[in-house]
Image 1 (cartoon, one colour):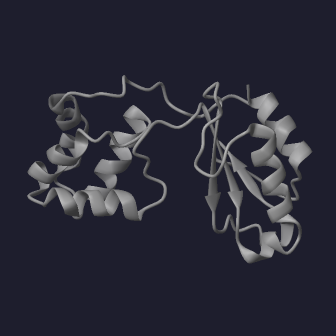
Image 2: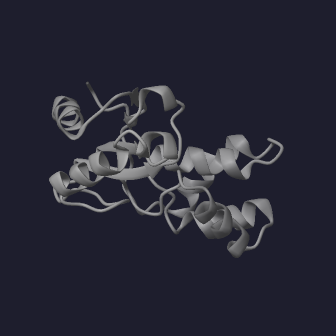
Length: 162
């Protein structure tokens, strides 16, 4: 499986670069979320340098922009690994061994939640439902949903991902 992540630009963009990315979205109603998604698609995270630019363009306070970024768990303030592994933490998955599976995966990778492996290959994030409640425990690797997973299967899926 190939990573579905786009080729990313350097992580310290200039304000003009940020403005170029968000300019096509300024006419949208409620453009902040689409702008944040666009920025993250380009840089792999929402760089701190984007906050004052967004605040200026949208006539918002920096605290308001930061509040939106920190409220939504899918926005990152630092780059993720080449692959993102999301493990379901909802009750349905926990009831069929999801907690033990997650603990084993985290131990095997040597990271905690939201951590990235030392080689930058994998970032592990909790998610609170993937919609596979009948097929738990569930996980997602680079947007590909997997059901009835265990630590060994996730390890082999990650290995196959590269």
